[in-house]
Length: 307
Image (cartoon, rainbow, N blue to C red; front, side):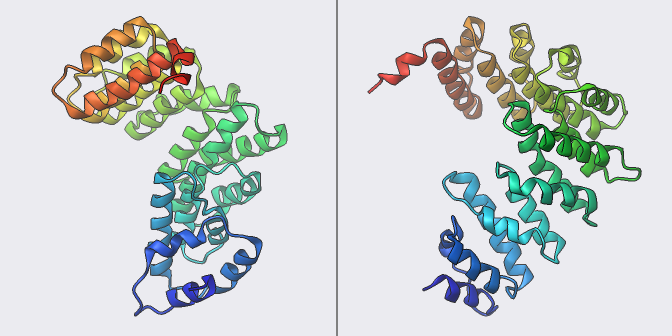
């Protein structure tokens, strides 16, 4: 079945969807993209949503799949659900050509769901800016758009949260002020985003606050604090992270184990070896993975010659 026939078949609502053929939409050639652009618009919206959901799930499990062209085309769909799925699908895309469309969606799309999804996908480019992989002009555009969303009066809380989390990777006084304001806002969800942002910033000025939030009453905040502790990479946090390995929340426990592995060092290795003796499959699995990272960091050449 040709790509054109497959897309035409999708328009027939009585026909069952063959998800296995979605692989045809990965890495479209110029000719295939032309066919897609013609045949995709008539596909019923519920089916588009179903297919985009499958594409996002498939690409998360297989990094070799590339549905970028599909997502880019769907950014202009008339349905907010389709636009949201498309924007979220671009969360790991590093194609500079989508910076402009994502900024436009963050600032102008009428749907808060879509604006929030655009903020999530701009996070990748903010990280690239932190790594010196973007032009200064692009970095400025992204920063300005995120600040606009954060400071816009009446903006949806979810949009503000995603923008705060994205801007964390872009250094500057404004970023620190935004994180500080979110942290002291008194809103539990903004506090979570602020703690997440503290870790993404790689700025150890936030370490005291992260340590405080490891004792938060909110498991979501403890999870973000455990993750941030690993990202900040200070060995002094290992005892606090080890304490979180016995947290009442499993996700917090696993995050703490991973962070211990990220920090590494002799103390981390001993702690992870202790985790292997715990009667919890999730903890043991996380500890095994983290130990590999610790051992690789200690002797990366040893892994090159393993058979």
